[in-house]
Length: 543
Image 1 (cartoon, one colour):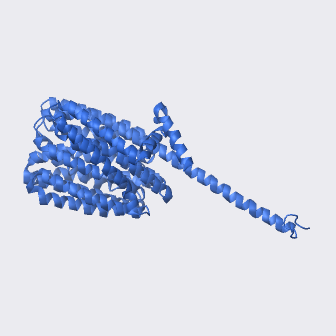
Image 2: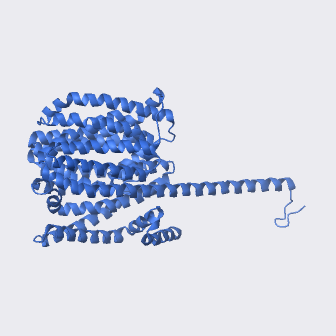
Image 3: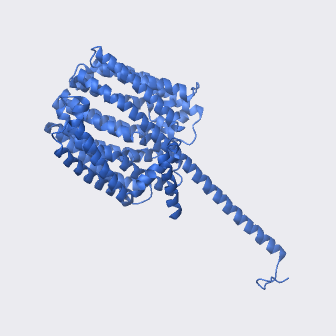
Protein backbone atom coordinates (compact mmCIF):
# COMPACT_ATOMS: atom_id res chain seq x y z
CA UNK A 1 0.00 0.00 0.00
CA UNK A 2 1.15 3.50 -0.86
CA UNK A 3 0.47 6.48 1.31
CA UNK A 4 -1.47 8.90 -0.92
CA UNK A 5 -0.10 11.93 0.90
CA UNK A 6 3.58 11.09 1.05
CA UNK A 7 3.96 8.58 -1.73
CA UNK A 8 5.79 6.24 0.69
CA UNK A 9 4.88 2.63 1.51
CA UNK A 10 2.39 2.38 4.35
CA UNK A 11 3.15 -0.03 7.21
CA UNK A 12 0.04 -0.85 9.32
CA UNK A 13 2.15 -1.82 12.35
CA UNK A 14 4.26 1.29 12.15
CA UNK A 15 1.12 3.37 11.70
CA UNK A 16 -0.33 1.89 14.84
CA UNK A 17 2.87 2.62 16.74
CA UNK A 18 2.84 6.17 15.44
CA UNK A 19 -0.74 6.60 16.56
CA UNK A 20 0.17 5.31 20.01
CA UNK A 21 3.10 7.69 20.18
CA UNK A 22 0.89 10.60 19.17
CA UNK A 23 -1.71 9.56 21.73
CA UNK A 24 1.01 9.33 24.38
CA UNK A 25 2.33 12.80 23.58
CA UNK A 26 -1.17 14.23 23.59
CA UNK A 27 -1.90 12.54 26.91
CA UNK A 28 1.28 14.01 28.38
CA UNK A 29 0.30 17.46 27.14
CA UNK A 30 -3.17 17.10 28.61
CA UNK A 31 -1.67 16.04 31.94
CA UNK A 32 0.74 18.97 31.86
CA UNK A 33 -2.10 21.36 31.09
CA UNK A 34 -4.18 19.90 33.89
CA UNK A 35 -1.24 20.13 36.28
CA UNK A 36 -0.67 23.74 35.21
CA UNK A 37 -4.33 24.55 35.74
CA UNK A 38 -4.20 22.82 39.09
CA UNK A 39 -1.14 24.81 40.15
CA UNK A 40 -2.74 28.04 38.96
CA UNK A 41 -5.92 27.26 40.85
CA UNK A 42 -3.89 26.42 43.97
CA UNK A 43 -1.90 29.65 43.66
CA UNK A 44 -5.12 31.64 43.25
CA UNK A 45 -6.59 29.91 46.30
CA UNK A 46 -3.48 30.70 48.33
CA UNK A 47 -3.64 34.27 47.08
CA UNK A 48 -7.25 34.59 48.16
CA UNK A 49 -6.46 33.17 51.59
CA UNK A 50 -3.42 35.41 51.95
CA UNK A 51 -5.39 38.49 50.92
CA UNK A 52 -8.18 37.63 53.34
CA UNK A 53 -5.56 36.99 56.03
CA UNK A 54 -3.96 40.37 55.54
CA UNK A 55 -7.39 42.01 55.55
CA UNK A 56 -8.52 40.36 58.79
CA UNK A 57 -5.28 40.83 60.68
CA UNK A 58 -5.08 44.45 59.56
CA UNK A 59 -8.70 45.02 60.59
CA UNK A 60 -7.86 43.49 63.96
CA UNK A 61 -4.97 45.92 64.41
CA UNK A 62 -7.17 48.87 63.49
CA UNK A 63 -9.81 47.82 66.02
CA UNK A 64 -7.19 47.31 68.72
CA UNK A 65 -5.35 50.53 68.03
CA UNK A 66 -8.42 52.71 67.82
CA UNK A 67 -9.32 51.65 71.33
CA UNK A 68 -5.63 51.64 72.18
CA UNK A 69 -5.34 55.32 71.30
CA UNK A 70 -8.06 56.05 73.83
CA UNK A 71 -6.40 53.80 76.41
CA UNK A 72 -2.90 55.23 75.99
CA UNK A 73 -4.28 58.78 75.98
CA UNK A 74 -5.82 58.04 79.38
CA UNK A 75 -2.80 56.19 80.77
CA UNK A 76 -0.27 58.86 79.74
CA UNK A 77 -2.31 61.35 81.74
CA UNK A 78 -2.54 59.12 84.81
CA UNK A 79 0.93 57.58 84.75
CA UNK A 80 4.41 59.10 84.68
CA UNK A 81 7.27 58.64 82.19
CA UNK A 82 9.00 56.63 84.93
CA UNK A 83 6.07 54.18 84.97
CA UNK A 84 6.36 53.60 81.23
CA UNK A 85 10.13 53.36 81.51
CA UNK A 86 9.89 50.74 84.27
CA UNK A 87 7.58 48.49 82.27
CA UNK A 88 9.63 49.04 79.10
CA UNK A 89 12.77 47.96 80.96
CA UNK A 90 11.09 44.85 82.41
CA UNK A 91 9.46 43.94 79.10
CA UNK A 92 12.75 43.82 77.22
CA UNK A 93 13.63 40.45 78.80
CA UNK A 94 10.21 38.78 78.49
CA UNK A 95 10.37 37.83 74.80
CA UNK A 96 13.84 36.40 75.36
CA UNK A 97 12.56 33.91 77.90
CA UNK A 98 9.55 33.03 75.76
CA UNK A 99 11.79 32.32 72.80
CA UNK A 100 13.78 29.83 74.85
CA UNK A 101 10.55 28.14 75.91
CA UNK A 102 9.24 28.01 72.33
CA UNK A 103 12.64 27.20 70.75
CA UNK A 104 11.29 28.25 67.35
CA UNK A 105 8.91 25.27 67.21
CA UNK A 106 5.93 27.46 66.32
CA UNK A 107 7.74 28.75 63.23
CA UNK A 108 8.60 25.17 62.25
CA UNK A 109 4.98 24.03 62.62
CA UNK A 110 3.76 26.83 60.37
CA UNK A 111 6.00 25.98 57.40
CA UNK A 112 6.56 22.21 57.67
CA UNK A 113 4.93 20.07 54.97
CA UNK A 114 3.32 17.53 57.32
CA UNK A 115 2.44 18.07 60.99
CA UNK A 116 1.33 14.93 62.83
CA UNK A 117 0.10 14.53 66.39
CA UNK A 118 3.40 13.18 67.71
CA UNK A 119 5.33 16.20 66.46
CA UNK A 120 2.75 18.69 67.77
CA UNK A 121 2.61 16.99 71.18
CA UNK A 122 6.39 17.02 71.41
CA UNK A 123 6.43 20.76 70.72
CA UNK A 124 3.68 21.43 73.25
CA UNK A 125 5.16 19.51 76.19
CA UNK A 126 8.59 21.00 75.68
CA UNK A 127 7.23 24.57 75.49
CA UNK A 128 5.02 24.15 78.56
CA UNK A 129 7.69 22.62 80.80
CA UNK A 130 10.33 25.08 79.64
CA UNK A 131 7.92 27.99 80.20
CA UNK A 132 7.28 27.01 83.82
CA UNK A 133 10.98 26.56 84.55
CA UNK A 134 11.91 29.87 82.92
CA UNK A 135 9.18 31.67 84.83
CA UNK A 136 10.85 30.52 88.06
CA UNK A 137 14.22 31.70 86.77
CA UNK A 138 12.81 35.15 86.00
CA UNK A 139 11.43 35.49 89.51
CA UNK A 140 14.86 34.62 90.91
CA UNK A 141 16.92 37.00 88.75
CA UNK A 142 14.50 39.96 88.87
CA UNK A 143 16.44 41.75 91.66
CA UNK A 144 19.61 41.69 89.54
CA UNK A 145 17.79 43.34 86.63
CA UNK A 146 16.51 46.01 88.99
CA UNK A 147 20.14 46.87 89.72
CA UNK A 148 21.05 46.85 86.01
CA UNK A 149 18.26 49.32 85.16
CA UNK A 150 18.85 51.44 88.27
CA UNK A 151 15.17 51.16 89.22
CA UNK A 152 14.09 49.02 92.19
CA UNK A 153 10.50 48.94 90.88
CA UNK A 154 11.65 46.76 87.99
CA UNK A 155 11.98 43.79 90.38
CA UNK A 156 8.30 43.30 91.42
CA UNK A 157 7.09 44.28 87.96
CA UNK A 158 9.28 41.69 86.25
CA UNK A 159 8.35 39.01 88.79
CA UNK A 160 4.68 39.57 88.02
CA UNK A 161 5.24 39.72 84.26
CA UNK A 162 7.05 36.37 84.38
CA UNK A 163 3.59 34.74 84.16
CA UNK A 164 3.46 36.09 80.59
CA UNK A 165 6.02 33.46 79.54
CA UNK A 166 3.87 30.58 80.85
CA UNK A 167 0.71 31.95 79.24
CA UNK A 168 2.23 32.43 75.80
CA UNK A 169 4.13 29.12 75.87
CA UNK A 170 0.92 27.29 76.77
CA UNK A 171 -0.82 28.71 73.69
CA UNK A 172 2.03 28.59 71.17
CA UNK A 173 1.07 25.30 69.46
CA UNK A 174 -2.68 26.07 69.09
CA UNK A 175 -1.78 29.51 67.71
CA UNK A 176 0.70 27.97 65.27
CA UNK A 177 -1.95 25.52 64.07
CA UNK A 178 -4.40 28.33 63.34
CA UNK A 179 -1.73 30.15 61.32
CA UNK A 180 -0.78 26.96 59.49
CA UNK A 181 -4.42 26.48 58.48
CA UNK A 182 -4.51 30.13 57.38
CA UNK A 183 -7.43 30.75 59.75
CA UNK A 184 -6.49 34.40 60.06
CA UNK A 185 -10.07 35.53 60.54
CA UNK A 186 -10.26 33.52 63.76
CA UNK A 187 -6.84 34.78 64.87
CA UNK A 188 -7.89 38.36 64.19
CA UNK A 189 -11.16 38.13 66.09
CA UNK A 190 -9.71 36.44 69.15
CA UNK A 191 -6.78 38.87 69.21
CA UNK A 192 -9.17 41.82 69.08
CA UNK A 193 -11.30 40.42 71.90
CA UNK A 194 -8.23 39.83 74.08
CA UNK A 195 -6.86 43.31 73.44
CA UNK A 196 -10.16 45.02 74.24
CA UNK A 197 -10.52 43.14 77.52
CA UNK A 198 -6.90 43.89 78.46
CA UNK A 199 -7.24 47.61 77.74
CA UNK A 200 -10.45 47.89 79.74
CA UNK A 201 -8.73 46.20 82.68
CA UNK A 202 -5.72 48.54 82.34
CA UNK A 203 -7.88 51.66 82.50
CA UNK A 204 -9.81 50.31 85.49
CA UNK A 205 -6.57 49.64 87.37
CA UNK A 206 -5.19 53.08 86.44
CA UNK A 207 -8.30 54.86 87.68
CA UNK A 208 -7.98 52.88 90.91
CA UNK A 209 -4.68 54.70 91.46
CA UNK A 210 -2.41 51.67 91.18
CA UNK A 211 0.01 53.36 88.78
CA UNK A 212 2.44 51.08 86.94
CA UNK A 213 0.33 48.01 87.74
CA UNK A 214 -2.18 49.14 85.12
CA UNK A 215 0.44 48.39 82.46
CA UNK A 216 1.29 45.08 84.13
CA UNK A 217 -2.36 44.03 84.15
CA UNK A 218 -2.72 44.89 80.47
CA UNK A 219 0.37 42.82 79.61
CA UNK A 220 -0.97 39.72 81.41
CA UNK A 221 -4.67 39.81 80.56
CA UNK A 222 -4.11 39.94 76.77
CA UNK A 223 -2.09 36.69 76.47
CA UNK A 224 -4.35 34.93 78.97
CA UNK A 225 -7.46 35.60 76.90
CA UNK A 226 -5.69 34.92 73.59
CA UNK A 227 -4.40 31.56 74.82
CA UNK A 228 -7.81 30.51 76.11
CA UNK A 229 -9.51 31.36 72.82
CA UNK A 230 -6.78 29.63 70.78
CA UNK A 231 -7.35 26.37 72.66
CA UNK A 232 -11.09 26.62 72.06
CA UNK A 233 -10.91 27.45 68.35
CA UNK A 234 -8.03 25.18 67.29
CA UNK A 235 -9.85 22.08 68.59
CA UNK A 236 -6.53 20.36 69.17
CA UNK A 237 -5.47 18.48 72.28
CA UNK A 238 -1.99 17.09 72.97
CA UNK A 239 -1.32 13.40 73.45
CA UNK A 240 0.98 11.98 76.10
CA UNK A 241 3.72 11.61 73.51
CA UNK A 242 7.26 12.92 73.19
CA UNK A 243 9.62 12.03 70.36
CA UNK A 244 13.31 12.83 70.65
CA UNK A 245 13.68 12.38 66.90
CA UNK A 246 10.97 14.97 66.21
CA UNK A 247 12.51 17.19 68.87
CA UNK A 248 15.93 17.14 67.18
CA UNK A 249 14.43 17.94 63.77
CA UNK A 250 12.40 20.85 65.14
CA UNK A 251 15.32 22.08 67.23
CA UNK A 252 17.56 22.15 64.16
CA UNK A 253 15.17 24.52 62.37
CA UNK A 254 13.93 26.33 65.46
CA UNK A 255 17.41 26.96 66.79
CA UNK A 256 18.09 29.25 63.83
CA UNK A 257 14.79 31.05 64.37
CA UNK A 258 15.65 31.35 68.04
CA UNK A 259 18.99 32.84 67.10
CA UNK A 260 17.30 35.60 65.11
CA UNK A 261 14.91 36.51 67.89
CA UNK A 262 17.56 36.07 70.57
CA UNK A 263 19.81 38.60 68.87
CA UNK A 264 16.88 41.04 68.57
CA UNK A 265 16.07 40.65 72.26
CA UNK A 266 19.69 41.18 73.26
CA UNK A 267 19.76 44.31 71.14
CA UNK A 268 16.55 45.65 72.71
CA UNK A 269 17.77 44.82 76.21
CA UNK A 270 21.16 46.35 75.52
CA UNK A 271 19.65 49.53 74.10
CA UNK A 272 17.33 49.89 77.10
CA UNK A 273 20.22 49.35 79.50
CA UNK A 274 22.46 51.85 77.68
CA UNK A 275 19.77 54.54 77.47
CA UNK A 276 18.57 54.16 81.07
CA UNK A 277 22.12 53.90 82.41
CA UNK A 278 23.44 56.89 80.45
CA UNK A 279 20.44 59.22 80.21
CA UNK A 280 18.12 57.95 82.99
CA UNK A 281 14.94 55.90 83.16
CA UNK A 282 12.82 58.90 82.05
CA UNK A 283 14.78 59.05 78.78
CA UNK A 284 13.88 55.42 78.20
CA UNK A 285 10.24 56.41 78.70
CA UNK A 286 10.56 59.16 76.08
CA UNK A 287 12.16 56.74 73.64
CA UNK A 288 9.43 54.19 74.40
CA UNK A 289 6.69 56.67 73.49
CA UNK A 290 8.44 57.65 70.24
CA UNK A 291 8.87 53.99 69.31
CA UNK A 292 5.28 53.23 70.25
CA UNK A 293 3.94 55.90 67.90
CA UNK A 294 5.86 54.45 64.95
CA UNK A 295 5.00 50.89 65.96
CA UNK A 296 1.31 51.78 66.08
CA UNK A 297 1.47 52.89 62.44
CA UNK A 298 3.41 49.78 61.43
CA UNK A 299 0.96 47.55 63.27
CA UNK A 300 -2.01 49.18 61.60
CA UNK A 301 -0.62 48.76 58.10
CA UNK A 302 1.95 45.98 58.02
CA UNK A 303 1.67 43.70 61.04
CA UNK A 304 -0.09 41.00 59.00
CA UNK A 305 2.79 40.64 56.55
CA UNK A 306 5.04 38.17 58.38
CA UNK A 307 2.41 35.68 59.63
CA UNK A 308 0.59 35.63 56.29
CA UNK A 309 3.52 35.66 53.87
CA UNK A 310 5.44 33.00 55.80
CA UNK A 311 2.61 30.53 55.17
CA UNK A 312 1.84 31.75 51.63
CA UNK A 313 5.47 31.65 50.44
CA UNK A 314 5.93 28.21 52.01
CA UNK A 315 3.08 26.85 49.90
CA UNK A 316 4.57 28.00 46.56
CA UNK A 317 8.29 27.73 47.31
CA UNK A 318 8.79 24.89 44.82
CA UNK A 319 7.75 27.09 41.86
CA UNK A 320 10.51 29.71 41.75
CA UNK A 321 9.09 31.74 38.87
CA UNK A 322 5.74 32.10 40.61
CA UNK A 323 7.47 32.81 43.89
CA UNK A 324 9.60 35.57 42.38
CA UNK A 325 6.60 37.17 40.69
CA UNK A 326 4.54 36.93 43.88
CA UNK A 327 7.34 38.51 45.91
CA UNK A 328 7.82 41.48 43.57
CA UNK A 329 4.09 42.11 43.50
CA UNK A 330 3.98 41.90 47.29
CA UNK A 331 6.95 44.24 47.78
CA UNK A 332 5.37 46.93 45.59
CA UNK A 333 2.14 46.63 47.52
CA UNK A 334 4.01 46.73 50.84
CA UNK A 335 5.85 49.90 49.86
CA UNK A 336 2.60 51.58 48.87
CA UNK A 337 0.70 50.61 52.01
CA UNK A 338 3.34 51.20 54.68
CA UNK A 339 5.22 54.22 53.37
CA UNK A 340 2.21 56.56 53.22
CA UNK A 341 1.28 56.59 56.95
CA UNK A 342 4.94 56.57 58.01
CA UNK A 343 5.56 59.64 55.86
CA UNK A 344 2.64 61.39 57.54
CA UNK A 345 4.12 60.60 60.98
CA UNK A 346 7.58 61.78 59.90
CA UNK A 347 6.05 65.15 59.06
CA UNK A 348 3.45 65.58 61.82
CA UNK A 349 5.03 63.87 64.88
CA UNK A 350 5.43 67.19 66.82
CA UNK A 351 1.65 67.63 66.56
CA UNK A 352 0.55 64.01 66.83
CA UNK A 353 2.50 63.15 69.99
CA UNK A 354 0.85 65.80 72.23
CA UNK A 355 -2.57 65.09 70.69
CA UNK A 356 -2.31 61.38 71.44
CA UNK A 357 -0.11 61.23 74.54
CA UNK A 358 -0.69 64.64 76.14
CA UNK A 359 1.81 67.30 77.18
CA UNK A 360 5.21 66.64 78.70
CA UNK A 361 6.60 64.42 75.91
CA UNK A 362 8.52 67.09 73.99
CA UNK A 363 11.71 65.00 73.96
CA UNK A 364 9.86 62.36 71.92
CA UNK A 365 8.94 64.68 69.04
CA UNK A 366 12.12 64.70 66.96
CA UNK A 367 12.96 61.12 67.87
CA UNK A 368 9.59 59.94 66.53
CA UNK A 369 10.16 61.82 63.27
CA UNK A 370 13.53 60.19 62.68
CA UNK A 371 12.31 56.73 63.65
CA UNK A 372 9.44 57.12 61.17
CA UNK A 373 11.94 57.85 58.40
CA UNK A 374 13.84 54.73 59.42
CA UNK A 375 10.60 52.80 59.25
CA UNK A 376 10.04 54.03 55.69
CA UNK A 377 13.46 52.74 54.67
CA UNK A 378 12.81 49.30 56.10
CA UNK A 379 9.20 48.74 55.04
CA UNK A 380 10.25 45.65 53.11
CA UNK A 381 11.98 44.00 56.08
CA UNK A 382 8.85 42.23 57.30
CA UNK A 383 8.18 40.84 53.82
CA UNK A 384 11.74 39.56 53.50
CA UNK A 385 11.47 38.04 56.96
CA UNK A 386 8.42 36.06 55.91
CA UNK A 387 10.11 35.03 52.67
CA UNK A 388 13.21 33.56 54.32
CA UNK A 389 11.18 31.72 56.95
CA UNK A 390 8.64 30.46 54.44
CA UNK A 391 11.43 29.04 52.27
CA UNK A 392 13.01 27.32 55.27
CA UNK A 393 16.08 29.60 55.33
CA UNK A 394 16.11 31.05 58.87
CA UNK A 395 19.88 30.55 59.08
CA UNK A 396 20.58 33.19 56.42
CA UNK A 397 18.21 35.60 58.12
CA UNK A 398 20.00 34.89 61.42
CA UNK A 399 23.34 36.01 60.00
CA UNK A 400 21.71 39.15 58.62
CA UNK A 401 20.01 39.88 61.96
CA UNK A 402 23.22 39.29 63.88
CA UNK A 403 25.11 41.85 61.82
CA UNK A 404 22.37 44.50 61.70
CA UNK A 405 21.32 44.24 65.36
CA UNK A 406 24.94 44.26 66.44
CA UNK A 407 25.50 47.40 64.38
CA UNK A 408 22.39 48.98 65.90
CA UNK A 409 23.49 48.28 69.47
CA UNK A 410 27.00 49.48 68.79
CA UNK A 411 25.68 52.71 67.28
CA UNK A 412 23.42 53.28 70.30
CA UNK A 413 26.30 52.72 72.71
CA UNK A 414 28.57 55.07 70.77
CA UNK A 415 25.99 57.89 70.49
CA UNK A 416 24.18 57.54 73.84
CA UNK A 417 26.12 60.36 75.48
CA UNK A 418 24.93 62.71 72.73
CA UNK A 419 21.23 62.20 73.58
CA UNK A 420 18.14 60.53 72.18
CA UNK A 421 18.13 62.47 68.91
CA UNK A 422 21.67 61.34 68.10
CA UNK A 423 20.67 57.73 68.83
CA UNK A 424 17.72 58.09 66.43
CA UNK A 425 19.95 59.45 63.65
CA UNK A 426 22.31 56.54 64.18
CA UNK A 427 19.40 54.14 63.81
CA UNK A 428 18.45 55.81 60.52
CA UNK A 429 21.96 55.20 59.21
CA UNK A 430 21.74 51.53 60.17
CA UNK A 431 18.41 51.29 58.33
CA UNK A 432 20.11 52.37 55.11
CA UNK A 433 22.78 49.68 55.47
CA UNK A 434 20.14 47.05 56.33
CA UNK A 435 17.98 47.88 53.31
CA UNK A 436 20.81 47.64 50.79
CA UNK A 437 22.04 44.39 52.36
CA UNK A 438 18.61 42.77 52.02
CA UNK A 439 18.51 43.54 48.31
CA UNK A 440 21.49 41.27 47.74
CA UNK A 441 20.34 38.53 50.13
CA UNK A 442 16.82 38.42 48.70
CA UNK A 443 18.05 38.52 45.11
CA UNK A 444 20.24 35.51 45.75
CA UNK A 445 17.40 33.61 47.38
CA UNK A 446 15.02 34.33 44.49
CA UNK A 447 17.71 33.58 41.90
CA UNK A 448 17.58 37.07 40.44
CA UNK A 449 19.67 40.24 40.63
CA UNK A 450 19.79 42.66 43.55
CA UNK A 451 18.87 45.37 41.05
CA UNK A 452 15.59 43.60 40.29
CA UNK A 453 14.75 43.42 43.99
CA UNK A 454 15.75 47.07 44.52
CA UNK A 455 13.74 48.29 41.51
CA UNK A 456 10.51 49.12 43.36
CA UNK A 457 12.49 51.19 45.89
CA UNK A 458 12.93 53.94 43.29
CA UNK A 459 9.19 54.53 43.28
CA UNK A 460 9.20 54.55 47.09
CA UNK A 461 11.95 57.19 47.30
CA UNK A 462 10.23 59.54 44.86
CA UNK A 463 6.83 59.12 46.54
CA UNK A 464 8.20 59.78 50.04
CA UNK A 465 10.38 62.75 49.05
CA UNK A 466 7.68 64.55 47.06
CA UNK A 467 4.77 63.86 49.39
CA UNK A 468 6.88 64.45 52.52
CA UNK A 469 8.20 67.75 51.16
CA UNK A 470 4.69 68.94 50.33
CA UNK A 471 3.53 67.85 53.78
CA UNK A 472 6.33 69.75 55.50
CA UNK A 473 5.48 72.90 53.53
CA UNK A 474 1.82 72.53 54.48
CA UNK A 475 2.79 72.07 58.13
CA UNK A 476 4.83 75.27 58.02
CA UNK A 477 2.01 77.25 56.42
CA UNK A 478 -0.54 76.03 58.97
CA UNK A 479 1.67 76.54 62.04
CA UNK A 480 -0.91 78.88 63.63
CA UNK A 481 -3.86 76.54 63.02
CA UNK A 482 -5.36 74.24 65.64
CA UNK A 483 -3.11 71.11 65.72
CA UNK A 484 -5.87 68.68 64.76
CA UNK A 485 -6.85 70.67 61.66
CA UNK A 486 -3.20 71.02 60.65
CA UNK A 487 -2.62 67.28 60.96
CA UNK A 488 -5.72 66.53 58.87
CA UNK A 489 -4.66 68.91 56.09
CA UNK A 490 -1.06 67.64 56.08
CA UNK A 491 -2.32 64.05 55.94
CA UNK A 492 -4.58 64.91 53.00
CA UNK A 493 -1.79 66.65 51.07
CA UNK A 494 0.68 63.81 51.67
CA UNK A 495 -1.92 61.20 50.68
CA UNK A 496 -2.92 62.93 47.43
CA UNK A 497 0.67 63.38 46.25
CA UNK A 498 1.69 59.90 47.37
CA UNK A 499 -1.20 58.32 45.47
CA UNK A 500 -0.48 60.49 42.44
CA UNK A 501 3.15 59.33 42.33
CA UNK A 502 1.97 55.75 42.79
CA UNK A 503 -0.43 56.09 39.89
CA UNK A 504 2.31 57.58 37.71
CA UNK A 505 5.31 55.39 38.60
CA UNK A 506 3.64 52.15 39.74
CA UNK A 507 0.23 52.09 38.01
CA UNK A 508 -0.30 48.39 38.62
CA UNK A 509 -0.17 48.77 42.40
CA UNK A 510 -3.60 50.35 42.79
CA UNK A 511 -5.20 48.05 40.22
CA UNK A 512 -3.66 44.95 41.74
CA UNK A 513 -4.62 46.09 45.22
CA UNK A 514 -8.28 46.37 44.31
CA UNK A 515 -8.10 43.12 42.33
CA UNK A 516 -6.63 41.28 45.34
CA UNK A 517 -9.36 42.67 47.53
CA UNK A 518 -11.97 41.69 44.97
CA UNK A 519 -10.71 38.09 44.94
CA UNK A 520 -11.21 37.80 48.69
CA UNK A 521 -14.59 36.87 50.13
CA UNK A 522 -14.76 40.18 51.94
CA UNK A 523 -13.77 42.32 48.99
CA UNK A 524 -16.07 40.47 46.59
CA UNK A 525 -18.99 42.00 48.46
CA UNK A 526 -17.77 45.54 47.79
CA UNK A 527 -19.13 46.83 44.44
CA UNK A 528 -16.44 49.45 43.90
CA UNK A 529 -13.65 46.85 43.67
CA UNK A 530 -15.30 44.38 41.29
CA UNK A 531 -14.31 46.34 38.21
CA UNK A 532 -10.66 46.24 39.27
CA UNK A 533 -10.65 42.46 39.04
CA UNK A 534 -11.94 42.60 35.47
CA UNK A 535 -9.37 45.22 34.47
CA UNK A 536 -6.54 43.21 36.03
CA UNK A 537 -7.69 40.05 34.23
CA UNK A 538 -7.90 41.92 30.94
CA UNK A 539 -4.36 43.26 31.40
CA UNK A 540 -3.03 39.75 32.08
CA UNK A 541 -4.68 38.43 28.90
CA UNK A 542 -3.24 41.25 26.78
CA UNK A 543 0.27 40.73 28.16
